[in-house]
Length: 465
Image: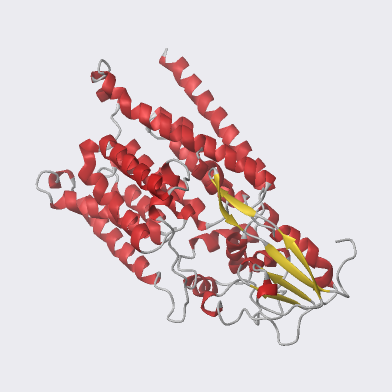
């Protein structure tokens, strides 16, 4: 009897995995990589040694993990138009880990098709696509961390290597473990082997954190958006009204406090540091994937096991957490599918179309200038740097020169590619202008509109446009 049930479960998860992978392939084939994806590709392509890659990513404020992964796939012959293969592989590994874990069934069924998993993790080729498999790995090994500390601590260090958010969350888990080891009631649960592994991992964690300090000449724009807006969009969807945002922020917070009421101290220790980081230092909408997955894995980790559920089976209240998870993840499910559909209709980036437009001019030796960040998304379509006013043999964007180097050539170029409407800044008499529209949908609403403008000297302008 159990064998038949197990076969049905395996078949269900195999079908869900096949559906997930098929959606990822469809979305990836129709997704136009944006400038940040192109940036990571160029860093890997235009640096041939580990030292050079490490030097380059220091200006990115992140570890070389993703760039090295991309470099490996480049060496294997992967072409830029199939860059989505990299995040799809890692997200598929994450789904496999999820299915093999003891997470609640509702999480296993819905989480793979949430916005963050089926779209952001499976399609967008940036280091954030490592977040999902890293979080799933932590979730899978957490309950046995005392018996298998090495696997648990390696999972934490893998998350640490994704970005500064990963460092903060890794530190939060380790802080809770340290509290448990100090607490007289729980210290006996952690043997000498765990403690030795823990302090070795803590030393590695601190060393890795120090390497993330950017160079002295790095120039970053510290960008923060409304945390209330981001928080509500993360767990529900975007709303324009500020008052409503704060009302929903309060209601969601109350719901989460109720959901984790039996483990509120542990959840607070693990979740609050990343919330404070986002609230006061730096975050963008897509960074909230860390907060989303953190809440999900804590729900799975702290979820009652089958034996406890059987004891409470006569109590209707015991089903409330599962019902709450089901409603919450259902919204994410529709947001994921909607995002794939919208990205298919209106891709975020116009880089591919712009590259196609520029190809005849580049091949004929015409001079091309660039202005702004978005034009760098065009570079991966060419074998080398195409912009005459970007004086480097590297095609990627160097942050410390971002505000000084991006100036038009003194002698006007034949073609200018810009992320801004330059007629408001320069006298471009004698140029024909062309606009390539694109936008990014975050869940159900537009997050960014990203036009690319191309200006061509009138005597070179194509008559067909």
